[in-house]
Length: 242
Image (tube, rainbow, N blue to C red; front, side):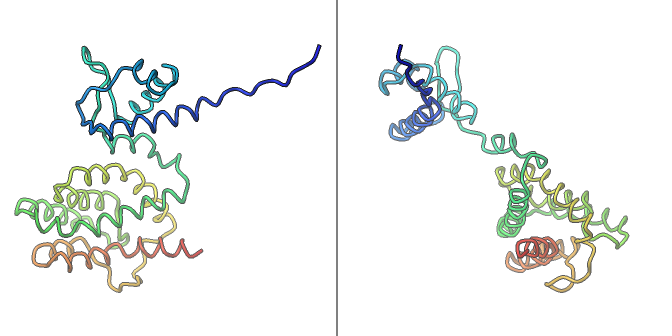
């Protein structure tokens, strides 16, 4: 009896990928908004000519991303995705490669450079008073040996993110905090943050940043925080040239 070569299993994964793309295009083409109901699995299956299993798998992916959800008596509806929550699921520093960690840390530097205009637009006297308390507490325990103490950085810069009044930006700050802590500890261990010799000259302290925020402009503050973060930039650029 003739032996036939075995059939290779159908690559259902690629089919699900295609259906997922089709569903996203359907939502867009029909101008569906969060809260709108979407067709049932059977309708999608008949329209696309695939099984309900494939449709179910594609919808499950979209549900995992927070794009759709099931509502009692309404079926499946579109949902406003929680971008921060989606990132948070995978942002464990111990699971990410060095290149990814480096780029995420650099993202934090870029964010802090870019929010100066929003700080000056939204700052209040209450904000200034709270920053003053943070800086005074820092100065009371300052030993002069470490330029960047982790708790000081988190308190001061966390307040700046809060002052931006941008909820998504604040979410990114919280999201990137574990990455910041991880990279910070590595830099501190290598003594990269203790030096007085920076490419920008004199180290800019939190006190100097606060005074600039009181009487300066977005441009002068941008320059000041760039110099404050100089050791981190130096470290990033040094590593990128290796």
